[in-house]
Image 1 (spheres, one colour):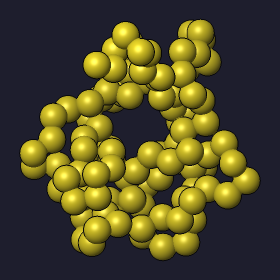
Image 2 (cartoon, helix red, strand yellow):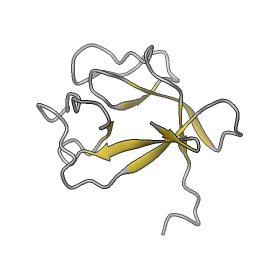
Image 3 (cartoon, helix red, strand yellow):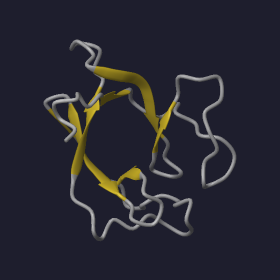
Length: 106
Protein backbone atom coordinates (compact mmCIF):
# COMPACT_ATOMS: atom_id res chain seq x y z
CA UNK A 1 0.00 0.00 0.00
CA UNK A 2 1.20 3.48 -0.80
CA UNK A 3 0.55 6.89 0.77
CA UNK A 4 1.76 10.15 -0.79
CA UNK A 5 4.76 8.56 -2.53
CA UNK A 6 5.59 6.33 0.43
CA UNK A 7 4.94 2.63 0.86
CA UNK A 8 4.11 1.61 4.42
CA UNK A 9 4.35 -1.86 6.05
CA UNK A 10 8.15 -2.01 6.15
CA UNK A 11 9.64 -3.34 9.38
CA UNK A 12 13.02 -4.07 10.93
CA UNK A 13 14.00 -7.67 11.73
CA UNK A 14 15.96 -7.90 14.97
CA UNK A 15 17.53 -11.22 13.89
CA UNK A 16 19.22 -10.01 10.68
CA UNK A 17 19.09 -6.24 11.30
CA UNK A 18 17.47 -5.82 7.86
CA UNK A 19 14.34 -4.11 6.56
CA UNK A 20 11.61 -6.25 5.02
CA UNK A 21 8.09 -5.76 3.68
CA UNK A 22 5.62 -7.08 6.25
CA UNK A 23 2.42 -6.40 4.32
CA UNK A 24 2.18 -9.91 2.86
CA UNK A 25 0.94 -13.13 4.54
CA UNK A 26 4.50 -14.48 4.78
CA UNK A 27 7.37 -12.57 6.35
CA UNK A 28 10.05 -13.79 3.93
CA UNK A 29 13.23 -15.78 4.51
CA UNK A 30 15.62 -14.26 7.04
CA UNK A 31 19.40 -14.67 6.54
CA UNK A 32 19.59 -15.53 10.26
CA UNK A 33 17.23 -18.48 9.75
CA UNK A 34 13.52 -19.15 9.24
CA UNK A 35 11.37 -16.04 8.73
CA UNK A 36 11.92 -12.41 9.71
CA UNK A 37 10.80 -11.34 13.20
CA UNK A 38 9.52 -7.78 13.55
CA UNK A 39 8.09 -8.15 17.05
CA UNK A 40 10.21 -5.28 18.51
CA UNK A 41 9.98 -3.14 15.34
CA UNK A 42 8.21 0.10 14.65
CA UNK A 43 6.50 0.74 11.34
CA UNK A 44 8.51 2.32 8.52
CA UNK A 45 7.59 3.93 5.20
CA UNK A 46 9.89 3.84 2.19
CA UNK A 47 9.75 6.24 -0.76
CA UNK A 48 8.08 4.66 -3.76
CA UNK A 49 9.65 6.04 -6.93
CA UNK A 50 6.64 6.93 -9.08
CA UNK A 51 8.83 8.74 -11.63
CA UNK A 52 6.76 11.90 -11.20
CA UNK A 53 8.50 13.56 -8.30
CA UNK A 54 12.04 14.84 -8.14
CA UNK A 55 14.34 12.13 -6.73
CA UNK A 56 15.81 13.03 -3.35
CA UNK A 57 17.79 9.88 -2.76
CA UNK A 58 19.31 6.80 -4.33
CA UNK A 59 17.29 5.08 -7.02
CA UNK A 60 17.49 1.40 -8.16
CA UNK A 61 16.21 -0.29 -4.99
CA UNK A 62 13.87 -3.27 -5.50
CA UNK A 63 11.84 -5.69 -3.35
CA UNK A 64 12.12 -9.47 -3.73
CA UNK A 65 9.11 -11.64 -2.95
CA UNK A 66 11.09 -14.66 -1.63
CA UNK A 67 12.90 -12.83 1.17
CA UNK A 68 10.53 -9.82 1.35
CA UNK A 69 13.69 -7.70 1.54
CA UNK A 70 14.90 -4.62 -0.24
CA UNK A 71 18.07 -4.89 -2.34
CA UNK A 72 20.10 -2.56 -4.53
CA UNK A 73 19.55 -3.38 -8.22
CA UNK A 74 21.95 -0.80 -9.64
CA UNK A 75 24.88 -3.19 -10.11
CA UNK A 76 25.45 -6.02 -12.59
CA UNK A 77 24.81 -8.59 -9.86
CA UNK A 78 21.71 -8.45 -7.66
CA UNK A 79 23.15 -9.92 -4.48
CA UNK A 80 22.60 -13.30 -2.84
CA UNK A 81 19.12 -13.92 -1.44
CA UNK A 82 18.80 -15.81 1.87
CA UNK A 83 16.09 -17.90 0.17
CA UNK A 84 18.66 -19.12 -2.37
CA UNK A 85 20.31 -17.90 -5.59
CA UNK A 86 20.23 -14.18 -6.42
CA UNK A 87 17.58 -11.54 -5.89
CA UNK A 88 15.07 -10.93 -8.69
CA UNK A 89 13.35 -7.55 -8.83
CA UNK A 90 11.19 -8.26 -11.88
CA UNK A 91 7.99 -8.27 -9.77
CA UNK A 92 8.95 -5.12 -7.87
CA UNK A 93 8.14 -1.49 -8.22
CA UNK A 94 10.95 1.05 -8.05
CA UNK A 95 12.04 2.36 -4.65
CA UNK A 96 14.07 5.37 -3.67
CA UNK A 97 16.01 5.51 -0.41
CA UNK A 98 16.36 9.03 0.92
CA UNK A 99 19.78 10.19 1.97
CA UNK A 100 20.03 11.44 5.54
CA UNK A 101 21.47 14.93 5.69
CA UNK A 102 23.98 16.00 8.30
CA UNK A 103 21.20 18.01 9.93
CA UNK A 104 19.15 14.83 10.45
CA UNK A 105 21.97 12.65 11.83
CA UNK A 106 22.86 13.68 15.36
